[in-house]
Image 1 (cartoon, rainbow, N blue to C red):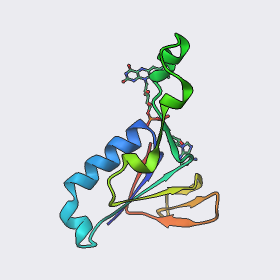
Image 2 (cartoon, helix red, strand yellow):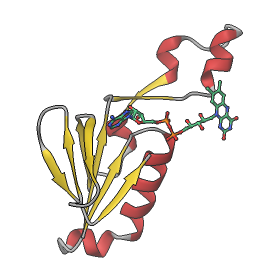
Image 3 (cartoon, helix red, strand yellow):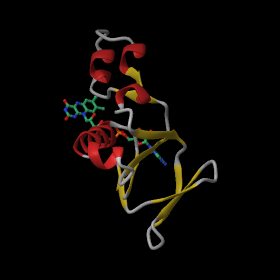
Image 4 (tube, rainbow, N blue to C red):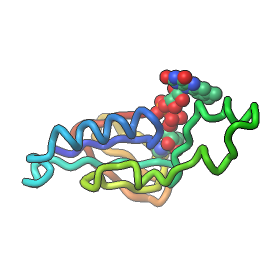
Length: 107
Ligand SMILES: Cc1cc2nc3c(=O)[nH]c(=O)nc-3n(C[C@H](O)[C@H](O)[C@H](O)COP(=O)(O)OP(=O)(O)OC[C@H]3O[C@@H](n4cnc5c(N)ncnc54)[C@H](O)[C@@H]3O)c2cc1C
Protein backbone atom coordinates (compact mmCIF):
# COMPACT_ATOMS: atom_id res chain seq x y z
CA UNK A 1 0.00 0.00 0.00
CA UNK A 2 1.40 3.35 -1.06
CA UNK A 3 0.66 6.26 1.28
CA UNK A 4 1.48 9.67 -0.15
CA UNK A 5 1.62 12.73 2.10
CA UNK A 6 1.79 16.09 0.35
CA UNK A 7 3.15 18.77 2.67
CA UNK A 8 5.90 18.62 5.26
CA UNK A 9 4.50 21.07 7.77
CA UNK A 10 3.15 20.36 11.22
CA UNK A 11 0.23 18.20 10.09
CA UNK A 12 2.10 16.15 7.50
CA UNK A 13 5.04 15.53 9.81
CA UNK A 14 2.94 14.37 12.78
CA UNK A 15 0.85 12.09 10.59
CA UNK A 16 3.81 10.60 8.70
CA UNK A 17 5.72 9.78 11.90
CA UNK A 18 2.61 8.41 13.59
CA UNK A 19 1.91 6.11 10.64
CA UNK A 20 5.57 5.05 10.38
CA UNK A 21 5.56 4.02 14.05
CA UNK A 22 2.29 2.09 13.73
CA UNK A 23 3.25 0.37 10.48
CA UNK A 24 6.74 -0.86 11.37
CA UNK A 25 6.06 -4.52 10.39
CA UNK A 26 4.32 -3.57 7.12
CA UNK A 27 7.11 -1.14 6.18
CA UNK A 28 9.79 -3.72 6.96
CA UNK A 29 8.00 -6.37 4.90
CA UNK A 30 7.57 -4.01 1.95
CA UNK A 31 3.80 -4.22 2.27
CA UNK A 32 3.49 -0.47 2.87
CA UNK A 33 5.48 2.60 1.92
CA UNK A 34 5.17 6.18 3.08
CA UNK A 35 6.31 9.00 0.83
CA UNK A 36 6.27 12.68 1.70
CA UNK A 37 6.51 15.42 -0.92
CA UNK A 38 7.12 18.95 0.25
CA UNK A 39 7.96 22.34 -1.13
CA UNK A 40 10.87 22.93 1.23
CA UNK A 41 13.70 21.03 2.90
CA UNK A 42 13.11 23.18 5.98
CA UNK A 43 10.41 22.98 8.63
CA UNK A 44 9.30 26.25 10.18
CA UNK A 45 7.94 26.36 13.73
CA UNK A 46 5.18 28.85 13.01
CA UNK A 47 4.24 29.71 16.62
CA UNK A 48 7.84 30.90 16.98
CA UNK A 49 6.92 33.86 14.79
CA UNK A 50 5.32 35.40 17.88
CA UNK A 51 8.63 35.12 19.76
CA UNK A 52 10.46 36.53 16.75
CA UNK A 53 8.18 39.55 16.82
CA UNK A 54 9.06 40.32 20.43
CA UNK A 55 12.77 39.59 19.98
CA UNK A 56 12.89 36.33 21.98
CA UNK A 57 13.88 34.10 19.03
CA UNK A 58 16.04 34.61 15.96
CA UNK A 59 14.91 33.56 12.45
CA UNK A 60 17.47 30.71 12.47
CA UNK A 61 15.86 29.20 15.57
CA UNK A 62 12.52 28.80 13.77
CA UNK A 63 13.87 26.39 11.15
CA UNK A 64 14.85 22.70 11.34
CA UNK A 65 15.87 20.34 8.56
CA UNK A 66 12.68 18.55 7.59
CA UNK A 67 14.42 15.22 6.94
CA UNK A 68 15.80 15.19 10.50
CA UNK A 69 12.24 15.28 11.89
CA UNK A 70 11.08 12.19 10.02
CA UNK A 71 11.33 8.48 10.84
CA UNK A 72 13.99 6.92 8.64
CA UNK A 73 11.43 4.68 6.92
CA UNK A 74 9.68 7.70 5.36
CA UNK A 75 10.77 8.58 1.84
CA UNK A 76 11.12 12.34 1.67
CA UNK A 77 11.43 14.42 -1.50
CA UNK A 78 11.55 18.18 -1.90
CA UNK A 79 9.50 18.35 -5.07
CA UNK A 80 6.23 20.28 -4.85
CA UNK A 81 3.09 18.83 -6.35
CA UNK A 82 1.74 20.74 -9.33
CA UNK A 83 -1.07 18.45 -10.49
CA UNK A 84 -3.45 16.17 -8.63
CA UNK A 85 -5.04 13.44 -10.76
CA UNK A 86 -7.53 12.11 -8.25
CA UNK A 87 -9.39 9.82 -10.69
CA UNK A 88 -6.13 8.07 -11.64
CA UNK A 89 -4.65 8.18 -8.11
CA UNK A 90 -1.43 9.94 -8.92
CA UNK A 91 0.19 13.37 -8.62
CA UNK A 92 2.71 15.11 -10.84
CA UNK A 93 5.48 17.21 -9.33
CA UNK A 94 7.47 20.23 -10.45
CA UNK A 95 10.35 17.97 -11.53
CA UNK A 96 7.96 16.04 -13.77
CA UNK A 97 7.89 12.90 -11.62
CA UNK A 98 4.68 10.98 -11.22
CA UNK A 99 3.80 9.45 -7.82
CA UNK A 100 1.00 6.91 -7.70
CA UNK A 101 -0.76 6.27 -4.40
CA UNK A 102 -3.40 4.16 -2.71
CA UNK A 103 -3.97 6.73 0.04
CA UNK A 104 -3.41 10.46 -0.44
CA UNK A 105 -3.11 13.01 2.36
CA UNK A 106 -3.01 16.68 1.39
CA UNK A 107 -1.44 18.46 4.35
C1 LIG B 1 2.19 33.12 14.88
C2 LIG B 1 1.52 31.77 14.93
C3 LIG B 1 1.24 31.18 16.18
C4 LIG B 1 0.61 29.93 16.23
N1 LIG B 1 0.34 29.38 17.46
C5 LIG B 1 -0.25 28.17 17.53
C6 LIG B 1 -0.51 27.54 18.78
O1 LIG B 1 -0.24 28.11 19.86
N2 LIG B 1 -1.12 26.33 18.79
C7 LIG B 1 -1.47 25.69 17.65
O2 LIG B 1 -2.02 24.58 17.70
N3 LIG B 1 -1.22 26.26 16.44
C8 LIG B 1 -0.62 27.47 16.36
N4 LIG B 1 -0.39 28.05 15.14
C9 LIG B 1 -0.89 27.38 13.94
C10 LIG B 1 0.01 26.23 13.49
O3 LIG B 1 1.37 26.65 13.41
C11 LIG B 1 -0.52 25.83 12.12
O4 LIG B 1 -1.88 25.49 12.23
C12 LIG B 1 0.22 24.65 11.59
O5 LIG B 1 1.60 24.94 11.43
C13 LIG B 1 -0.38 24.27 10.24
O6 LIG B 1 0.21 23.06 9.87
P1 LIG B 1 -0.05 22.46 8.47
O7 LIG B 1 0.72 21.17 8.40
O8 LIG B 1 -1.50 22.42 8.16
O9 LIG B 1 0.54 23.52 7.45
P2 LIG B 1 2.05 24.02 7.32
O10 LIG B 1 2.82 23.77 8.58
O11 LIG B 1 1.93 25.43 6.80
O12 LIG B 1 2.66 23.07 6.21
C14 LIG B 1 2.35 23.15 4.85
C15 LIG B 1 3.42 22.35 4.11
O13 LIG B 1 3.04 22.17 2.77
C16 LIG B 1 4.18 22.35 1.95
N5 LIG B 1 3.71 22.67 0.61
C17 LIG B 1 3.18 23.83 0.16
N6 LIG B 1 2.86 23.72 -1.14
C18 LIG B 1 3.18 22.45 -1.51
C19 LIG B 1 3.08 21.73 -2.74
N7 LIG B 1 2.58 22.28 -3.85
N8 LIG B 1 3.53 20.43 -2.78
C20 LIG B 1 4.04 19.85 -1.65
N9 LIG B 1 4.14 20.49 -0.46
C21 LIG B 1 3.72 21.78 -0.40
C22 LIG B 1 4.97 23.44 2.64
O14 LIG B 1 6.33 23.42 2.22
C23 LIG B 1 4.80 23.02 4.09
O15 LIG B 1 5.78 22.07 4.45
C24 LIG B 1 0.25 29.28 15.04
C25 LIG B 1 0.55 29.86 13.79
C26 LIG B 1 1.19 31.08 13.73
C27 LIG B 1 1.54 31.67 12.38
